[in-house]
Each structure stands twice: as C-alpha cells, then as structure tokens.
Amino acid sequence: MGVTGDVMGIEKIRPMADEVAGLMAARFGGVRRGQHADLGSMLRKRGGALPRRLRREARVLADADLKAGQPKLARQVDFEQLERAHKALVSYLRPLGQGGRMQGGVVGVAASVMFGLLILAAVAIWIMKVRGLI
Figure 1: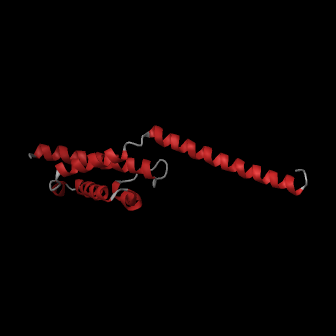
Figure 2: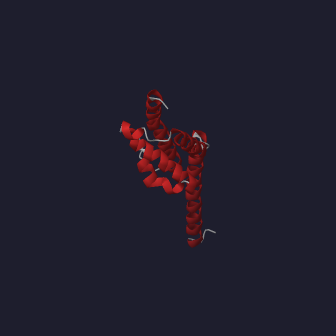
C-alpha cells in the first residue's frame, strides 16, 4: 500500500472508532447527555455488554484509534482487519435504531406510570377498607 493509501486509512480510523463509540453509548448507555466518549472508555465502561467475539473486534479498533495519533505507529495497522472489525461492530450495534430506542423509552415511562397508578389504587382500596366504606 502506498503512502497515500496509508494516509487515507489513518484518517478513517478516528471516525470509525467514534461511530462505534457513539453506537455503544446509544445502545448501552454510559455517557452523560452532551458528552462524547471515546471507544477506549466505552470499552472499559460497557464493553462487557458486547459478545466476546465483538469485544475482540472493538479492542482492535480501539488500539488502531490509539495508534492513529502517531503516524509511524498507524502504518502498522492492518486496515483490512480494521474494516472487518468496524463492519461487524456497526452491523451488531446499528439494528436498534433511534425509533426503537424511543419506543422503548416510551414503553418504560408508560409502565412506570401504570405501576404508580396500581399502587395508588391499592392504597385507596386499603384506606376505604380500613374506614369501613367497603
């Protein structure tokens, strides 16, 4: 691979790692609203949520991301392996889209409200029973 191929590959490493970190944060949490996490910290926080095979792929991508800051080390990165790792991680993390996450959030809120109403009804029935109204 020529020098231009290496440079193009080096420039691709950081966006690939950021995309995977963003998908992990969206799917598994671990990042406060408005903050941006790098892939290394996401692996430390939520890496256990990934299947074992994908954890290895994520480590490959995180190591390449660290090497990308130093061009001499970045030339040692196997870009084919990196592409495969990125593709596998994105295909695993992406299926749960924004709509699915939003729907899951709405279902969670609705379940909390229903549980609260159930408790309120139970307390109201208990009070009515104690006062002899029923």
